[in-house]
Length: 218
Length: 338
Image 1 (cartoon, rainbow over the protein chains, first blue to last red):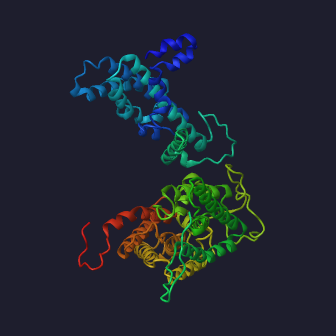
Image 2: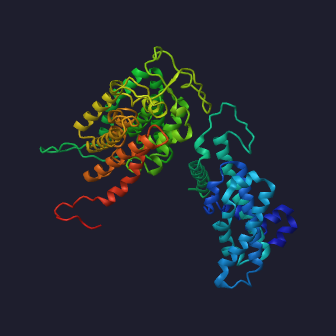
Image 3: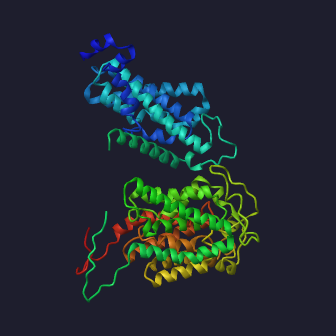
């Protein structure tokens, strides 16, 4: 866009960053097109392993890593992948990075690996990653794909962290394992059960949609 | 919004049909004897819990209507009925903050989120109770002994537990007939069961007063008799068969009928007009389904009581029952193909 050089001269670094057209690729995933709260993608991990903040954070970061790497590789290889076998190729790329992150988590903490269980392998079929590869990375250059992958990945991590924190605070009276509630706090058992995942997600969606509608003046 | 009514009328005056609020009002009246017996048996604690759920339900309904810019629907007594029913299904010493929380869930998640009265899939009071059962499993299965001598002037400290804090157990907790049978193998006598000299939820102990309320509603044609009859008959027959097979292991059919919440559920909860099928044939299927589920959950399930889940599952099956069993269209000879 032609407006950038003019802005750069009279405004600071951050405002020129904010006006840069590529910044939008990054911030879009964080907030406006948040993968969980707006696109409602990747429901399986966001409901299943968000019963504590640490599980949710690990799951979010693992997904963000796979998303970023697959976006880069798909974007690099977009001219070499035949159209007919593109989905299979994307899955192969994604599976490679899921295998890497699987072993990394095992090396870092075996307990965490046990908690996340099969859901690490299931990142392969997370529709969020495939949808970014198909809808964005295969049509854009590498730098934009990196920004998109980072934005979407961090947005996903943020959303999971919200659900996980909510469930851990009410379900266990703690946050990241730190018990800050009084010792006689009555734990809401339902919040660590699968049903609590649905309730928390619905509650957060309610809040997000409320603010969205308010912003649009409805 | 205001309705324009024209009150001029000539001689063939039509009798006004039953409106929702008339029916709801009479169901509340029919519940009162059983509720009063609950207060007599469990004292001040039970009264406070029932008041908390009733006030909580009505307030929630009013506020939700207000904030969604609808006309307030608390005048139709349905919120009061939901609150009272929820209070009657809770233990008499249940903490008030949990009871209030349950009534908010009942109205908010059980009814309002589906679009208000008439659109709810499940019985709202049971949604609230199921939520409380999953959220606070310990508090909802702590029973105090009925007919404690100080029940009319002493409020249990567990009832007044500080919001979000664990209730303190300050008195000897007792077992309900069902949990005594399930976990200790102790049988309660039929006489105690029928007249309500037992522990349990506030409104479920007196089978006699529940039946009186049910007969009143049936006589007023505000309750379809097929639902309670089919549920009770199925439960009676199935548990009778099991009793005949092995009298040492399974309870008598009379025990199944009078213990726990089966009477209250069959008469006042399964008969919720919104959650039950339309056709007579459908009602029989619905009742038999609930009766069977109650016996299965009680005899072979992990929990001593299964009426709540049985009725919720029955509610969930209702749309399918209505789809499968259709009323013959008047004037046609065969059932119309859908």
